[in-house]
Image 1 (cartoon, rainbow, N blue to C red):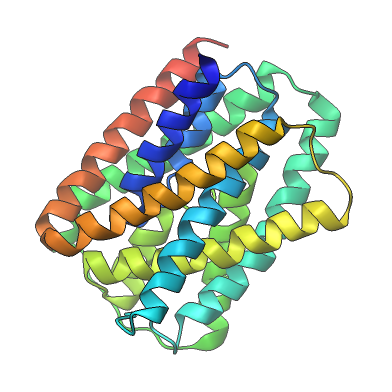
Image 2: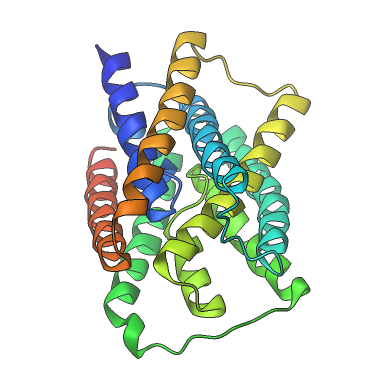
Length: 260
């Protein structure tokens, strides 16, 4: 029964994550913390694989359809920076995990950090019309910004998240739909690098193959459904869903903090 609930959550997270461009891991990871009973390393890995499958499908489908809105001048460098930063964030997580073990302390640190980032992002969405935006095009700057995003995303085990969209809105003046597509591209590169690194260092956690395959499949099918829905809705609806997503994340974080 627990596996069935996890698969339903995986599909729902991938669906909303595709529409909003925040990967889905930002909801999937804290929900699994709250209810799966799995270790923190296993949760990070399963969430990362699900997000990779979802984001890869969305990016490749968009590329094949020749309707890609990926900004080739800056987004690949954001993605490369995020991949490198992701490896650093993963190492920070591993160091803390070795020192603390699979205890509530590390989960609380992750939950508090995610809660702060999410709350700040939610506040920004209500003030974004009053915030100045830019059209930056420097490759080095993009790589640096991507690196910072990657560190936080990998350490938190969320694959991407609200931070990506705020950066794309603010520094690159992208519309909600364009930001969502570019964010998924960044997430794909970051997650691919992280999982390849994990496999290469032979630090793969012991997870159920059934659960891994099932969650990955839910990531793809959720991505398929999310793309179809996103095509039919307006930017304003995407913004409303994004805010709803953030409120849900805040609620989960509060629960996880209070339960440890």
